[in-house]
Image (cartoon, rainbow, N blue to C red; front, side):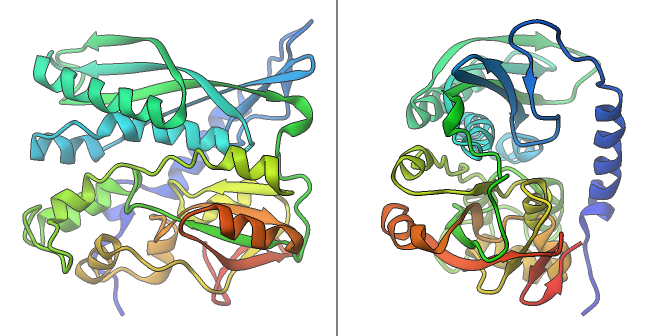
Length: 331
């Protein structure tokens, strides 16, 4: 099958972004002296700071071009949830409990109703994650920005000996996937292009939802992770965001084989069919139904499946540093 659309053609080159991030990180050589230094390196899902018996953690993320869908629909009530989710889910990967958040809004001009709706979503996201929103910044950047960009930064804390870094992951460990609510907050440059060129946001899906309603569905907040890590041995975790299955390579020098992938949500199935997207393009761009994953020893599997809604065994860890989907490499 030929690819009708691709993320690169839509305007996002994943390989170029990876090269750009590596180039940036290469310049970040300074390390604080004295107390409260950085633990580990730059590039995991969240950064860690030494605080004695505790570890503090910071991460930052945003909603991205999902904001353009909200603009087109005139509905900004859920994007605040996305903003919270994209940050706290990165924290949960390391079993960090998010405790505080600041938002950043850059806009071409203030729209009071829009700000109210964004606030509603931010408050709901904070509630779902049991986290304080302690402040933020709103910048009017007329002539510099078109529309509104919503991002945030999250602070988390955990006992040092409870942090999950992925260093315990070994070949043979089981991968448990956890269902997403849909597209979440990645791949929207491509999703929007496919939607607007194939009938628009009003197209009805088999469930009766419109494409617009499905695209604006907020990202799932995986707050149950903290309880899971208290109840069962967990070697590693993955938040399946931009880059799709390739995010697993951030966890360990070992590889990951997905043999029985999660069911694909109808909106992602629609995007696949209308975009005539190849498997590799789909699984390196979208979550394809798996928004989060646990990497665990066999002994933990039954307990986690019983605790987490929408969880199933999808594969296992392999010796080679690569990601396989039903035997085919995703790259």
